[in-house]
Amino acid sequence: MPRLSLVALVLCAASLVAGCQLAGPGKAPAKPPAQNALTGGEIEVTPLDAPAAETPTPPAVAGADGEAKAAPQATPAAETAPKADPGTPAPKADLEATPVTPKSEMQLACEKKKGRWSGIGKGNARACVFQTRDGGKRCDRESQCEGVCLARSGTCSPLKPLYGCNEILQDNGARVTLCLD
Image 1 (cartoon, rainbow, N blue to C red):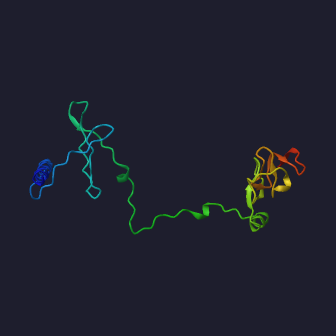
Image 2: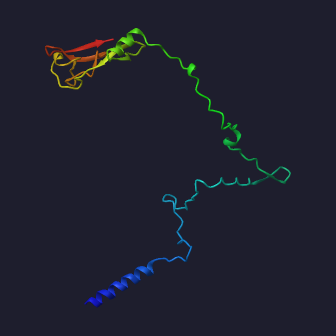
Image 3: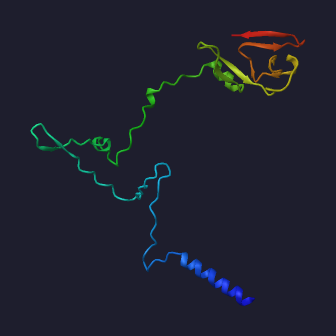
């Protein structure tokens, strides 16, 4: 029995070696060209550090007199743009062109209280808005919230004050529409 397993082992090794492609010394095994999965065509591989390929000669165009003339060649944008001197720093953006609006006293006071100076409504009106700690918490009346209790969702408002028209629940549980402009 041990002799049979030795023969089987030798046959397996021989079939594995026969299936391998052996290359001669210094020769790499031949690889099939890579195929594009979408089009089935061969994929062109170019190393990144290779020199730029020379531009092909433009095809000849027959002129009115029958003589072959070279077609005009388009010049790439990189060749037409003026080349910057490597020692010259790149031009900086003109910081003075961007107007900086100074903050108003109201905006500074708002930010000091940890509020957010924000636009309200459709016009240019701005106001100080605070984020509530209990925004999204379930509520049945306004006294359960830092801001207001929103009637539709039954949750505390995420901001205080809440501008626009909103249905809220008052302290007595009554549903009313509150509009702040």
